[in-house]
Image (cartoon, rainbow, N blue to C red; front, side, top):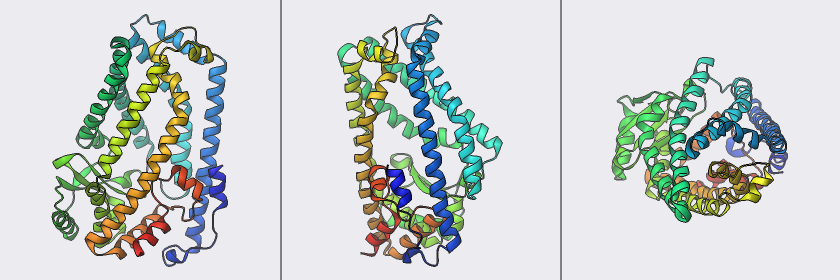
Length: 389
């Protein structure tokens, strides 16, 4: 329903704030981009739902469990086989959708720069990394539930919290460079202004890097990565090409604002708390015979409990996701305000937001329900209004 209302909320009249940034043709293009992506998403989600229902009804999970058990391994290895086959099935089904979105939709609207070679290499790298990281995490969780009894959910909760910190720590140096090149920003005005601003805010950074985002898309972005003194600023090369130095400093100031306002820490704590609740609820449903009967499975197992529980947890997860987006939008306003105040240049922040919206063909007039349910960032016109006030 939210997607339908979002389409109906499209306003053919260009908002005054964007006159001079959007021309009539490109503004119409942004609305067509929204319609195309919405239609694609609805078709994909509908087909996936139908396939899942059919898979359950015909006893697909039971067949998959029998296949995993046929290898005659222990519960942990059998669980890994079960999960890997399930993910492989999902990958095969999702693959055509991914191809269509990248090489048809993104290509049609002028965003795609991904070559077939890059697309395939990304897929292979993603699978390998997922197997390594996912197998390690899932194996440990299964072991805790198999060996530590009623308080297994506590051990799993602590393990996942530590594991998440580990991934955040290694991602900038190990994982991300597998997909993109990160080169130190060339000496010049931009680098000096960023360092000057960071110094004025007592914000230590390891370095400022340029990422080859144009390798895959013309869309722009910037972000921080790493922890503590290993923090680094990353700018897409497409962002650098399209923005002035003042605008780029404003974007950086926004990201610094997230750190200074402790948004990163708050988000991490929220994630850890909801993860703890998830494991506790999982422990209550672990090896539940009624649940296995509902999914037409002959054998009760710890590993299958995870998968079946995910269907029951989905509504709860959606609720927590909505809470998360509410706080996230609040944090975006705070980071915008921080950037405007610390740079004493709200106009550059506003201009940067406008350019980013145009470059990414963002929806300028989303429906409030769509925003409430899914938007991690406030609509751009609301952000501009807040900055001006």
